[in-house]
Image (cartoon, rainbow, N blue to C red; front, side, top):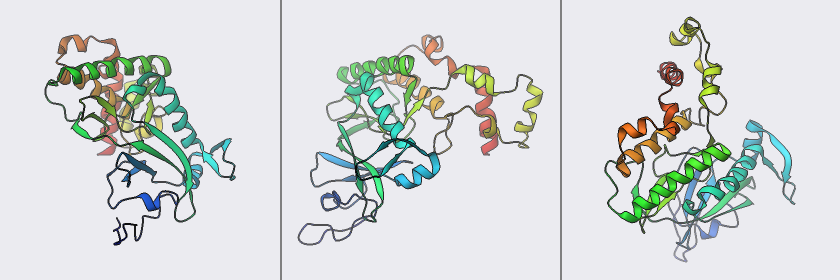
Length: 281
């Protein structure tokens, strides 16, 4: 955090803030997740999303495709390239629910390369992760119905699911419309077939995992866990079901029969989640 001098310009700024935007940042951190930090700007219509890791750190961890390089010679990590490609893909399905976002490349105050983004600031009236009753506004219910419909289409056609598990990721704005704030964390939908293939057919072979003698992480399907070790696909799917049940007041028995939520009922998948919780204990 930093303070303003009498002239209104920042006296000091966090080292991760882009050089071209440092003078526009106001004191205080609006929010943060495992990947990003969010800072307010002098232009109160916008926020600056700042990656917590540099591109160099991401390239060391995830490598680089070698296809995406800037004119200055900086190479973008495969992680960042995937995020940009995912954002382009999901925009065709749920673009109406994403705040206007402009990614851009810049050096931070330590002259280290990062990939930032400017995003339209959303005035939040309700965090939909905390949704215990049916939405009171017809406008909000209609917006949520459209969001659920479009997410289903997106999962079916491109196999991507938004991260709905985090606080403040999915909200209602001041107009009562659904907005997805976290645009940097779309996850691949992990199918039941992948889970069943990962687990040994003979339950006796699972005993070492249940007893903690072997880590269940060794056999998890790719992308089953997010950066923080959470089963993000299953958590997001459960969040969608809860929004239908509570936010829209839909029938619980009907949702239990809905094929879209079948992964939540799959016995082998539930066994894997139980083993994962045991491994984390």
